[in-house]
Image (tube, rainbow, N blue to C red; front, side, top):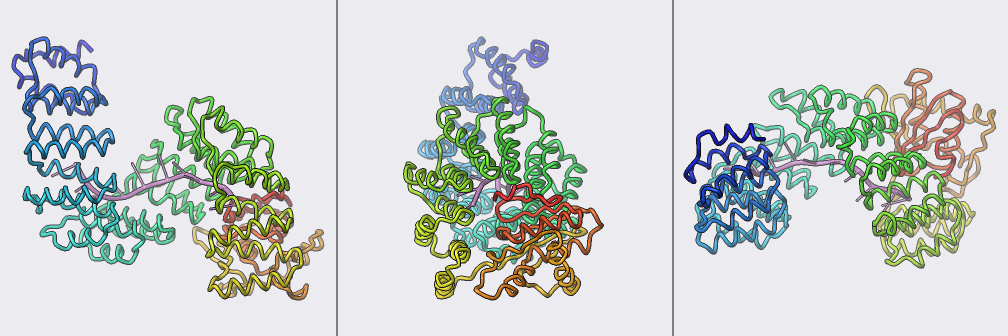
Amino acid sequence: MRTLLKPLLAQNPCFILDYAPIFQSLTGQNLLKLGQQVHTHMVLRGLEPNAYLGAKMVAMYASSGDLDSAVNVFHRVKYPSPLLYNSIIRAYTLHGYSARTVEIYGQMHCLGLKGDHFTYPFVLKCCAELSNILIGKCVHGLSLRTGLESDMYVGTSLIDMYVKCCEMGSARKLFDEMSVRDVSSWNALIAGYMREGEIYSAEELFGQMRCKNIVSWTAMISGYAQNGLAEQALSVFDEMLKKDSEVKPNWVTVMSVLPAFAHSAALERGRKIHKFASGIGLDSNASIQTALVAMYAKCGSLSDARQCFDRIRGSEKNLVVWNTMITAYASHARGSEAVSTFEDMVRAGVQPDHITFTGLLSGCSHSGLVDVGLKYFDGMKTVYSVQPRVEHYACVVDLLGRAGRLMEAMDVVDKMPMQAGPSIWGALLSACRNHPNLEIAETAARNLFSLEPDNSGNYVLLSNIYAEAGMWKEVDKLRILLKSQGMKKSPGGSWIEVNGKAHLFLGGDTSHSQANEIYMLLEELPKRMKAAGYVPDTRFALHDVSEEEKEHNLTTHSEKLAIAFGLLNTDPGAVLRVTKNLRICGDCHTATKFISRIYGREIIVRDVNRFHHFKDGHCSCGDYW
DNA sequence: GTAGGGTTAG
């Protein structure tokens, strides 16, 4: 440190202004000790900072992580200037104090000091973060009085402020009235439309842009991904790579596109983007690695997920990283791995949060680790200082419900300290499907119908339970109710990725070009399966029709179509990865176990809740899902 | 100095 200090003081500073370049050179270097020594040197000469030097010192301290000292210096300056105010405003925003920043700006205004084109972008960003449209409008008005309407930074910040305060109309008006727009103004508005789910408006603007930069493309990609339009996100990403060689994806772009791969369960394409990210040097980035863990887990490859997890350095393994890995294990029904990862996390000194426990408890639940799960739930508050929320109670209800301990589950619902929501009743109703209890099922369903009257899934679930009990009249009543309220059962769909291309099948779908071959294979299948001991489980065909007809309905479930397509179009022995938009049905689950043995294939099915790894006649869930 | 960002059950 001494050796660093000497050359800094070599000029032998005597006057206040001599120190300014020294503090400036220390700004952003994170050399706090050195800065303090220079400060001491100054104080020993009896010098007090003026507004100009104060601004430099505030910047130095703030950028070195010492906000308190920055504030102290700020208060010592007798005659503050706009520059000094800009500096302390920057200091507060750097440390995330939005409300304080706005207060400081108010103070500045009361002293009669005018904000400039450096003041407003920061202050507006804070208004946006606070979602405080009243203050935002006030600051907007004051910025106009200073004649800053033609400053593009201020203009874009204003648009962004209105966007984040959900006032798209005002944002658009500003944009339309701007005399000079730059690409950032367009980007802010596009991101705003995407936030609001106004995809078409965003697309229209994007189409009109003459020059797009990486932020424009990323706004579209992340916008699509956040609106659940994974395919569009992926195709815009591809288009960007193909068309615009000027534009280079960066880590934010990769972060935005990864969830889209996860959503489509497109493992092959996911691997490609991983290679791509490594190629541009992003593989050492912990956030990217975390997103990769999630992507691989959701694409069905736990081993790749674990590899990415292991590549993250110990010191960089934060809460989000651990949560992602624990949740990954949970969704693959690897309860004991979820538990051991949780224990590793605690040993590493990372404090778990509510998301950690949702993952841990659901992991226990999916693996039948009932008592282990209950033990962790009991210790949440006392051992780990995490207050249980309604989702944790839902996990416990699920945990007990899956194990058939319905009365205990009901008891938890009665005694929980908050009102039972849809997640609780939903868990209970699902439990009643595998462990029939009409009374509890009807109670749960009644609550669900009043809490979420438009969720057709609940009606279908109850109707399944009635069907299994052979109560066809009740099934019909529900179907009529469903129809009269204009609700449709969401159609079952499955897709499979073959050679990097996703093939989608709906239940009973005959539109695929290979439909003939697929149906021929599916007709063959039951014979081979029956020879191996398979009995079709017609409880899952939701019609009061003849046995043969039920059986036929079952053979054309979308997951079977996708698996048949996979068998026909991949090399023998290749792993099949199928994704389904609903929960896999019991008959398909049994059939897939047989298929995995007959064809010697590993088949991984991701349904709406979790993964099923089928291998040699068994499923990883142990028929427990 | 402005715009684009990952992890959460059923």
